[in-house]
Amino acid sequence: MVARAQAVEEKLPVTPAKDSVAAAEVSLFRNVLKIKKEHNLEGLGIAFYDLQTTIQWAYNGDQYFHAASTMKLAVLLGVFRQVERGELSLEAPVHIRNRFTSIVNQEPFMLDLSNDAEPDVYSHLGRTMTVRELAYWMITKSSNLATNLLVDVVGVRTIQLALDELEIDGIRILRGVEDQAAFEAGLNNEVSANGLLKLLRLIADGKAYSKHASDEMLKILLEQQFRSGIPAGLPKATRVAHKTGNISTVHHDAGIVFVEGRKPYVLVILTQFPAETARGTAVADVSRDIFNAIAEMTYE
Amino acid sequence: MSESQQIKVVDAFDLDDELRGLLKPGEMLRDQQGRRHRLPRYFYEVPSRDEATEIRLTPHFGLNEFVLVDLKEAPRLQEFPRYIPCAVRMLAFFLEQFRAAAGMSVHIAVNGGYRSPAHKMAIDSSPHMWGTAADIYRMGNSILKTKELIDRFNDLAEELSDDVLVLPYGHETGKAVDDHVHIDLGYIMVVPREISEDRMEVPQESRPRFAFEERRKRERRVPQPVAAGPENGKAE
Image 1 (cartoon, rainbow over the protein chains, first blue to last red):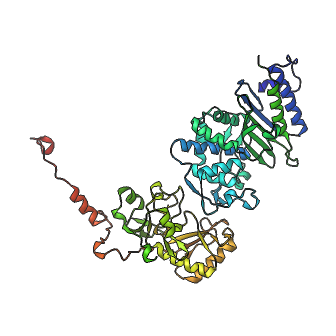
Image 2 (cartoon, chains in turn brown, purple):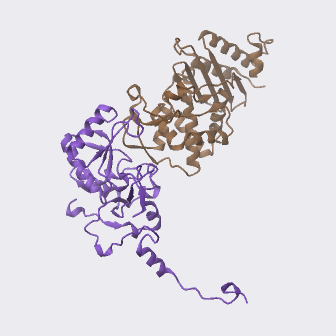
Image 3 (cartoon, rainbow over the protein chains, first blue to last red):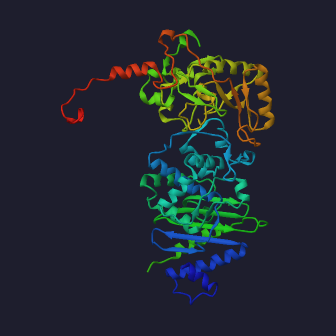
């Protein structure tokens, strides 16, 4: 679908019969191109899977983007791998310390906590929080401090191992966050829309190590407090288990959308825009279009 | 410690095998300069979290403040009863003076008090394994993360005693990053009054490490009956 869609660009084939799945897909594709143009996006990657109909759809699904905070989904998976193996307890205490080691030359660095809008972990400096609490803040408020602490606890190799074990291609984890030396050396975490989709599908299907582990991860993801991405394009009552990712030139969101009366769908939207451009509402616009497309679909 | 707060002292050689394996009483370690130091043998036994909180080593320092660890410590040593070298009371005494001189509360970081030899941060020998070093992350309301703050409290600690070692800002790497004041009284071994000299046995350099260990081993040996057959002698 992806390759075909990109090849034809805006010259779409003859309009399919109204109310068909194909019609909804074509309409969706047109809208996506329109959104890309309107928001002056340099890059757009979308992957979608509907558990109700098993329809899968992607646009630039295998293109790699800077992961930003979506890498925290992989960290969460790595944590639950260790928990499932009995090598880590969710109740284990972790020393809250703002001192990390760069993957470049092993140089130490600290996070700039004065810019951190999230005081929940920062206020525990010198004391402990449990692995469960850190996982919660890493996802729900995208705490960088909690993320780097958990990366230290489980290790980058374990996180990548978890991705490999579950055959998740399209997510490359090299380090924690705010490692400026690594950033300047071009060593970044990267994700593709299809990679994140696979990870979230495993959680939605209860297959991320176990049903119990998947449910625990889902519970945390449902508590997400940043709602300007996928949820902003949906009716207010819609529940979304998701993780956003923002740096100066990217805005991503990846989540599982629970719509009343049907099985959920999994959606990943990755956007990249020029440095001088504000991030805008592209993710919410795509989310809205996908939701509308689903609402319009009739299944043959 | 008041009379009502008497805390049990144990000889780590009397603990079970797992604990002995983790605490390594009397074992020789080397520091970063290659100097040798023998690990402590006598420990306070802390029966419960509540008692750790209640027992005051000095007016402002509870025993619990010196045993805060996270998952880097061996799981068995995170359970109660916990064990902490008896020399910790000397550290508490110094920190009480330090607190008075600073005129503010002193906060020891997690993993900043006693760390066993099994702790994941224990690479070379460090006085943390003797219970005689503290990493202080906060003084009053100030988080110690700048060179100015760390230098200021390092100077204060040095003014109090010539024998105390403080480490300069960025001490681990020489880089401009640090997050605590390290106060270190050195490798002090305390033999509590409760321990009698006639109970002490001097560890040896070569095996057997401890005289009584070899004696116990001998006592455990049961003579085996000699079976007939060529395996027990030269075949003829």
